Image (cartoon, rainbow, N blue to C red):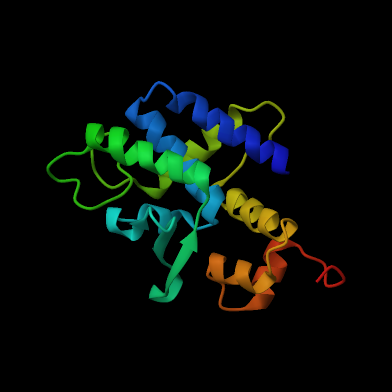
Length: 177
C-alpha cells in the first residue's frame, strides 16, 4: 500500500536527519530500492559512476550481465546527494574503491546487511508487515502501474526479459491490462 510505503520512507528519513553516516546510508538503501525496484544484488553492485544525478538515473547490471538504466525520483535523489556528500566520505577508507554503498568498515555493503536495513525500516512502522527488499521491488512495480505506467515500461525498469514475469510479479489482472 502506498501509505505504508510512505511511512517506511519517513522512518528511514527521520534517522537520517541527524546526518549520521549509517542512517544516511540506510535511507539511501530504502529510497533507492523503492524508487527503482532494482534487486538487492544490483543495488550492492552499484558504483559511484553508475549514478547520473543530473538525469536522475542509475545504470544497473542485471541478471545475465544485462545493463539497463533506471530512473529515480526526488526523494531518492535527495537521499543520494546527502549520502555521497556527507555519509559516504565518513565511512570511506583507502580500500573502499568505487562502491556506492559502504558497510560500517568502509567495504562494499553486502546483501545481508541491505536485507537487515529494510527489515528494520519496516519494523519501525507500526502495522506494516515485515518487508523484505523483494517486497519493495513488488511495491515499486505496483505503484508504477497504479500511477499509469505502461506494463512494458515496468518490465524494462525491473529488467524482466518476459512480459509474463512482470505480469505475474505485479499481480495485474488480464482484465485490467
